[in-house]
Image 1 (cartoon, rainbow, N blue to C red):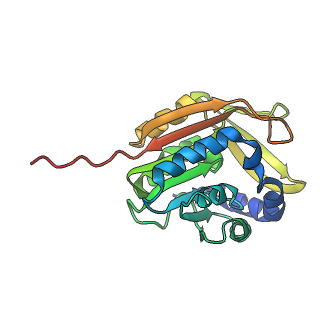
Image 2: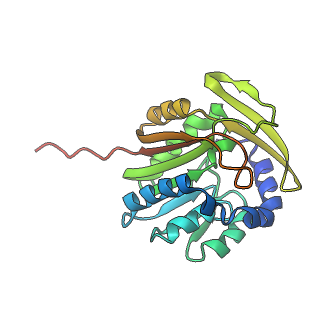
Image 3: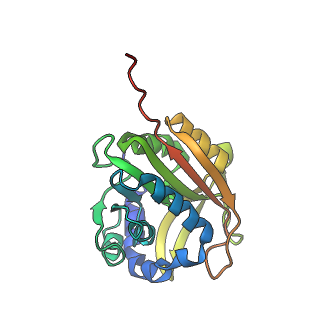
Length: 234
C-alpha cells in the first residue's frame, strides 16, 4: 500500500537535506519538553534492543537517543537525509524505506520514535501505518510520536474529518518542495493508536517555543506501548 505522494515527499527532502541538517541539528538544545520526553523513552527501552528513528531526517533525534546508549536505526525515505544522518549518528544503521511497508521482522524492535514523521500520512492511510508500526514492535515495545496540532498562523488549512486538517507547503528553507502536512489532534491520534492495538501511556500537548526555535504550532506528544503477551495459564 504505497502512498501516492511518497515520491514527491522523497524528492522534496532530498532537495533540502543539507540545509535541513544545518538548521535543525541542534534544535533539541532549546526544547526541554522534547528532551524530557526522549529521556523517558530512552530509559524505558535501554538494553531491550534497537530503536527506529522513523523519518529520521538528518538524525538529530536519533543522535540524542544514541548519546544515552540506545542503538539507533535511522530510517527515512530520503537517501540524502540518510547521508546527513551519518554525520550526526555515526554509529547508527541507516535504512532507506517507506513507512508503508517496513523491511523489518515482526516483533523485532524495542521502540520507534516518530518525531513529526507521520505528519505526511493522510488520515485515510494512517490506520494502516500504525498497524505496521505495531507489527514490528516487540511486546512491551514503545512508540513515541510527536505531531503538529495546529498550523502556523500564516498558513491556510483545509478541514478533514475527525478534527484533522491539512496544508500544502511548496517552499522550505528557501527551496521549492511539494509537501502535504496533516494535523492530528491528541485525542484523535490516541483513538487511532488504540484501534491499532496499542496502549496509551501518556499524551501531552504544549504551546510553541519562540520563533527562533521552531514554527509557531501547537504540538502533541504521545507515548504508546504494544501490550506485553500474557503468560499462559498453567
